[in-house]
Image (cartoon, rainbow, N blue to C red):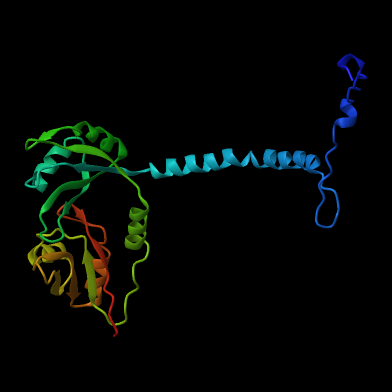
Length: 251
């Protein structure tokens, strides 16, 4: 048959040829309305969104807490190891009265490690002392900055000032800590001159033979012990001395 004699083909109806998708069913044969669930998911996401600023605010608040500083206290670092306590005092006391000066030392030798903590009578004076930041000392440039409060320092303060042991029955001994490494028995007897001291027992490092920075003082009577404990946090060679009742080991 010639091509022109062939009958024209009927055009397919797109509406008839388009196959409808079978609805998805779960294992029980019930249709799953996926489209209907989408707004619910979107609504849940919109409800969860406001929690992000709260978390950000909490993180920001934590960041501010980490940057808190101790009142009236600065840290001086980068100093030569040969720097003396008198030289450090000479640098800082021109800004105002110094409440305490604590030198950091190597635990094995007791030598100065170039780091010191200076506490002034007021925070205003401490801020003025920051002018020493970058000061040249012994061909080195020291750094002076405010002393930050850390979690460890808070725990240390709590253990040192808020949890003093109770007086053991019959004890006449006191714990004396935060001492300078070069403190002598004469220095302590002069320090406790208002009390009757029976004996002083220094804690010595067995490996190096150096002082460990604390001792136990035995007194002759209870009145002397009470008077000594009342001197807690008094200054001895520029350091606040920790004085508390000695703990008796019953074992």
